[in-house]
Structure formats: structure tokens, C-alpha cells
Image 1 (cartoon, helix red, strand yellow):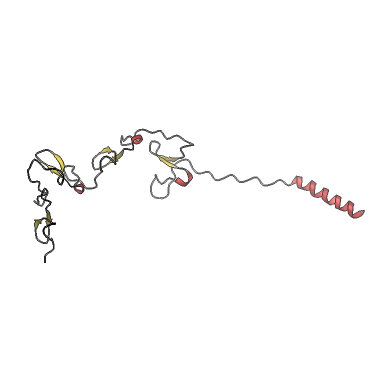
Image 2 (cartoon, rainbow, N blue to C red):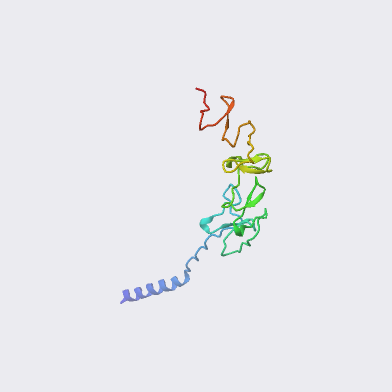
Length: 170
């Protein structure tokens, strides 16, 4: 019988003491800053895996469901709702699927990498493989006839048509 009393007393002690022990409160999840999340290179490296996207009008990373990003016009005047982008060489906003933003342009603003050259008689850039400059031969800075697809061959010191003649000296 003594064992029964001792067992009951021990159980009551454990129950009473367990009421005094409070469980540790859960640690709140870490919060990410609401401003630009920088990854060391530039201010547009938002943590996309955490839901952040770049907001041009606010110039910071944000979560669209937490904070609205007013759409409209970016700092260059391009309509970001219509996906316009600033093209530095052309000094204007473009829609990249409608026109290219050249990397190399000449003194007239023609995209040399896209086969454009200045047509003096028409006062505009033309694509020499697609159109003529009023029948006038268009020459590049080396005097080669662009309309005839001539290029300057440095080893031979003359203009050649690469589809007819090899530039290398044999």
C-alpha cells in the first residue's frame, strides 16, 4: 500500500511541476528587408526565389502582393506597360521585337552591324543588301562599294568581293 501512495504522490508531483514548465515560444521566421536586395553587382539583383521583383518606378525590389509597383513611365520616358526599353545608341525608347538596338553605329546613326550605311542622296540610313541608294554606288570609309558587297582586304590593300576572291595572300 505504501508503494501505491508513493506512486500516486510521484505522479501528482510530476503533473504539478509540468504546469510550471512553459514550452519555449516558436522563433519567428526571418524577415527580408523591403528595399533593394543587393547581391553585390547592382541594385536590380532581386531575390526572385523569395518573390521579389524589380520595380522601376520605385527603384527597388519588392513583392507585388505586399506592395504595389506603379506602372507607367521609367526614368527615360519609356512606357514599361508596353515593354519599351531605352536604346542608348538611338537615344530613344524602342520595342525590341519591332526594331533592334544597335551596338555599333556610325557618325550618321546607321547601324553598321545590321548592314546599314548612310545614303547621302536620300539623307537616311539604308540596308544596302535590301535597297539601293538611288542607283548611286555607296562607298564605305575605305572606298569599297557596299552595294556590291565589297570589303577592304588589308593584306592585298584593295577592295574585294569575298564571295569571288580570297583576302589571304597566296
